[in-house]
Image 1: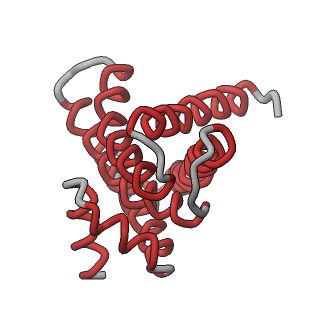
Image 2 (image 1 turned 135 degrees about the vertical axis):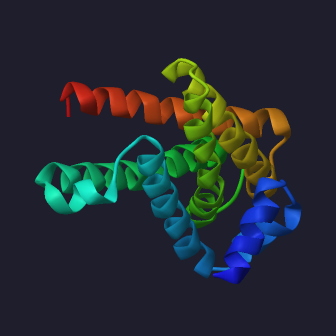
Length: 176
């Protein structure tokens, strides 16, 4: 896991070496998954959920399972939308697995959401601030993997988030 943490720091600093490593290292997909799950768990703790609540009530287990499923579905859907927009709409390149890795390594930046929410700002503002860094990292990854200019890469990263927001709104309304 030491190599993955080193690459996570490189990703956060937008260093090209991290994206090259993700492109050629199949193990990075599992590392990305670990980062997604660990980050979601830390976000839960930051929102006030307690481990003690897990052991004393069924509700605690339901919250944990729902949060983990939400994070995993986000990871899969967001990466898929970014991949599809880059490859089919913007005529870029790359493999879905690499987009999964990029998103997995960008996901820990969502911890910024916890810190911004503690500042007492609105949930919408915390979401925007918490997501901005993720979008920047994914944009950098799309530039590398998709071989597209920055404007197109930023569009793909934003389209991934828009796709997730639309899908989650549909699912919350029970339309699917």
